[in-house]
Length: 93
Length: 305
Image (tube, rainbow over all chains, first blue to last red; front, side, top):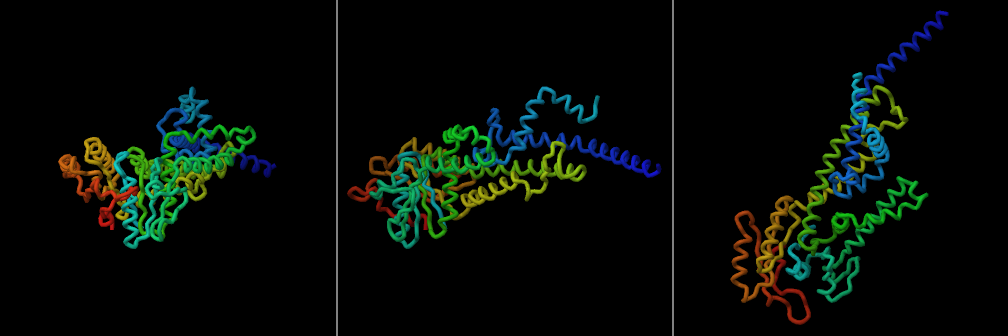
């Protein structure tokens, strides 16, 4: 009985701790996504009409930007609701 | 190893003077490679030879090479398309790679191909005492010479941004672990981040070319004629070079003859204003060697030796 209680308590503390950690990094994750999005916009932004770096910079980096391209794509699809996402990240209802 | 770029307006005599200077320097015991970047490719005509893209040994001290910028651009694109195909392998399944062939018509590719050729020559041709470049007309040459500095400025900015990204990843890694919620590994170390590694490698390459262009072993000779258009373009060229922190070492005033002597005096006065202190050498129309030769007799080597 006591052992079961101890296990449940540990599980509870672990969940709380994990929840605290997730809350702590939410904003950092949001910032990271934005930075990665800016990075890919700067390197291959000519595809959407932004001033581009010298073409070799875009060309030579393109093969390594798979992850950033996915973020760019995701950000583009969420762009109509960016404010809501920011408010969510800042925990503002 | 020293280098000399012969620049100037089209038709002023860059090929003739660069070939003459290269031959004269080689005759003074220096080992010289003369490279033409000019799409017009007159080197073969000057030396009465059929030149390819490989080095041709004209004498034991003088080697000639014509660089085909279009071919270099195709090679450059081919190597990167291969890498793209490897990274985005699904393209192969749908035969999409052929659509990327259009990249060869992109603005800026020719300049980059020239820069890559320049880089290759600098890295490989250490056995020569002098490398003499016959360049395309002013606009393209300025764009080629500007590329290392512009690229380095972009790369410096991208490095700062990438470091911020890696710092954020490190923070998240420390709090929640190795993977993000989508299961993607959070690479936070510079030596493990392939994007950062590629940027640093590019920075190292372009910094080297930039330092070399700005260094004391590189000389730029401006070739002009005694006419107003040539003067205006030479001034623009010299201003452009100054903006790039590159100093012209000499002005070669070509095709001067008794009929335009007064114009030549006026142009030299106008060219050598208070901003520019450079060696000036006149080359007279009568300096052209007799017969079918396109080389000049006047000694140009003393300017560069």
